[in-house]
Length: 256
Image (cartoon, rainbow, N blue to C red; front, top):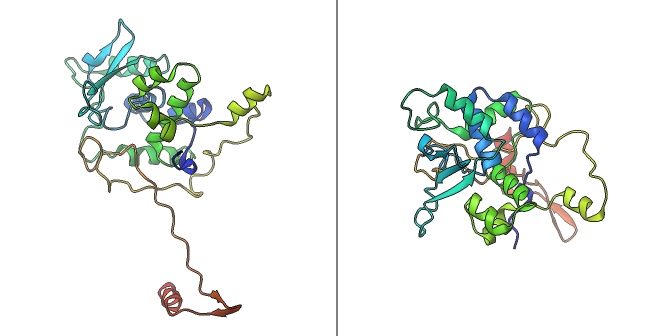
């Protein structure tokens, strides 16, 4: 059974570039690139990443995963050093201090809520944050990779099982229908994630759920967004007649 598809959101290349242009520094661009093109969990797999984990000659990255370390031989996995990640990794490496251990150094403090910061940068760029921001970056990448590589390879890179991938990550896109029908893919006039930052924004529960790494203030990549509550109706329909409920009068009084 598929998970809630209303919270699925595909971050295409055009939007990804717009986001990169809006981010404040090289480390944030690398964080985004690792999530979007590496399928890395944020922050639980971003913050433990060390320079020793970058296998430059083999074009691979060793990812340590606290979420899966309790499984046999699944505390780490190896992903390709995808070409979309490499220029951002090169830039951060060029700025790194001698003897630096961790790849990300500026955002390691306990009050560095990456999800909150990410929302802020999106809004400044006029981009409406989508539901489950870091999860959908991973899901976007897994969906792309599944179009090219066998599922066992993709799941090994993303760090989930085929069952989880099919239920919570892989998306069915309009491009798939168009390709199957032999039709050209029509591009929408405007991305659903672009627009004024003061329009309706998908908001979650920033900072109120612990991250996978145990840091209560860090961003959480699998968060559930909280839908806005509907205003209750002040009238009920019973036997063809309208009546006013006492609870509704209390609600109206609170509003006044």
